[in-house]
Amino acid sequence: MRVAVTIELSAKERLKLESLTKGRSSSLRAQERAAIILLAADGLENQEIAARLGQDKMKVGRWRQRYGKGGLAAILKDKSRPGRIPPVPAAVISKIIQLTTTSKPAGATH
Image 1 (tube, rainbow, N blue to C red):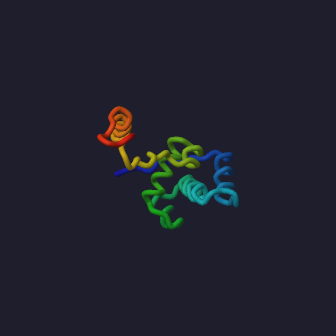
Image 2 (cartoon, rainbow, N blue to C red):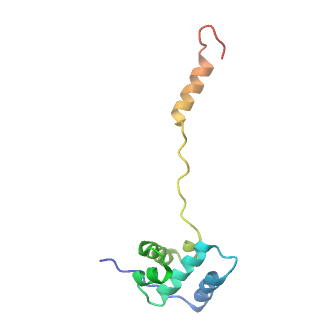
Image 3 (cartoon, rainbow, N blue to C red):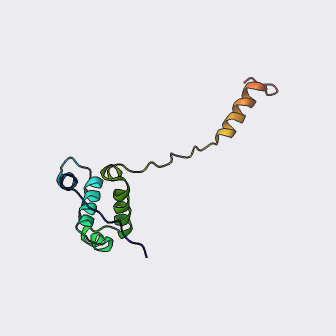
């Protein structure tokens, strides 16, 4: 059985998180994440936090764990994701370029 990360906040951290949840310029994601951390700091379990906020308990656990490892900076920025896979692989592109520049089709130009 997994044990949720215990969250302990200083007064300064709590004020920053509360301002994120209430701030009109804060993104919705930042507001949700800050609310999760505040409830976790109050001693609630992931399942109860999820029920109160209408979130998935896996999502609650993920953000609780990230905050435990990296603090406020970890919840304000999403993890990077790989970019789009190119439709034509680089090896095929280089082969086309090589064939186009080094050979001449019969009865045609490049």
